[in-house]
Amino acid sequence: MLKTNPTTRRSFMRIGGSVLALPFLETFATAKIAAAAPLKRMIFLGGGFGFTKDTFYPKEAGPFSKIGMTEGLSPLARHKDDLTMVTNLTNLGASDPHGGSTSYLTGANVAGTPGKRFHNSISCDQIAAQHLGNKTRFPSLILSAKEADGGQNSGHGQGLSLSWDESGNPIPGINRPLDLYHLLFAHPGDSRVELDARLKKKQSILDLVRIDGRNIKRILSKGDQEKLDEYFTGVRQVEKGLERQAKWADVPKPPAPFDTPSEGITGEEAIHLMYDMMIIALQTNMTRVITYRQPVCSLLAGMGMNLKAHSLSHYGFSQPRILASRERDRKCSSLFAHFLDRLKEAKDSDGSRLFDNCIVSYGSNLRSGHELKNVPAIVSGAGAKGIHYGRNIVLPKEDTPLANYWLTLMQQAGIRTDSFSHSTGILPELLS
Image (cartoon, rainbow, N blue to C red):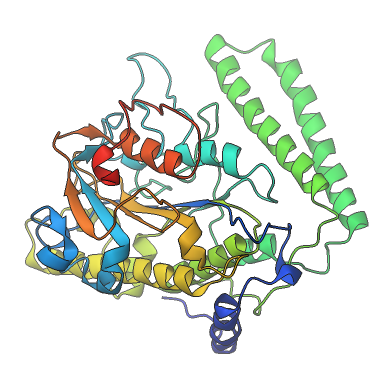
């Protein structure tokens, strides 16, 4: 595992940690927030390949104080009263275990109709962004991890992150802590004149692309024309992003609270940095929706495992792989526990914990190995006032649509919608 600069890391832990423990500071905010009414935030955390069947999942329903925490969940014990696991959820749109994360937040049948091209639908985080992020610098922050495993860049399925736009096109994610750092914090090139010049240059490039595309479209087959239409949908998304940058150009970004991170940070260190910058982005109201598809392969490498995530998911026939899978589970739970620690330390605009105004979902597109049914879903965050925490819920109906879970969380965030994807309703068991 590549190591970050020791001085940078020490500075980050010293300065970054103190920032998270401070009350909300208007100096660092990108928008004024009414102190009496902190706004809801939604956070979607996920990684591919599932967890170890026999040691991660609770064997029965009930409060964690009674049934206990499993080995895989044990690092989360200090948060056991602030999270709930939901059992018997299935992503009904997933038909290929190697493409599960493609539809994890959309629920779409991405296999499509036989003979037709691949398609997807909008992901629930982007619906949340439309409702919660219309007054923030970034409607949503989409984070990912660029790592190849078996030729699949997204870790488990096609796509560039867990997020898909309203036309069902993949949305690129920010892959490196360094890139997120430069996006969030002020730097010398942020003057209005320099920004206008960059925006004008980007717009000129888009204009050229559009002209060339119109010229070539006349000689393309119908299938290629559809592909080009998809491409121009992406171009229009870029244009919207440029318009938003121009709108926020006169609102200064907060100063960086720690030194520039090393370019080569990967695995656990990268996740820690991403988590801590996510906290700052939420605390300063730069965004209210974050999606993070976390790395798996580089995490394993950093743990000293000479295994790809996909090969580790085939652990059933190998005792060393079973032990490695269990160790991976504990590490993932430990990292999630760290993130919840940070949310509880950070202060919101009214002095409450940031945790009190967030809804956090943590899970995976698979259960264990290549099992598509009964995927793991853990929800936390006191922003969901109607959810009863501290327990494992076993839903009465097997293969309850995962979309019902997303719909429930969106409604808890104040989003007025009665359906999502293939949902059949909310999960009353989660609210009782």
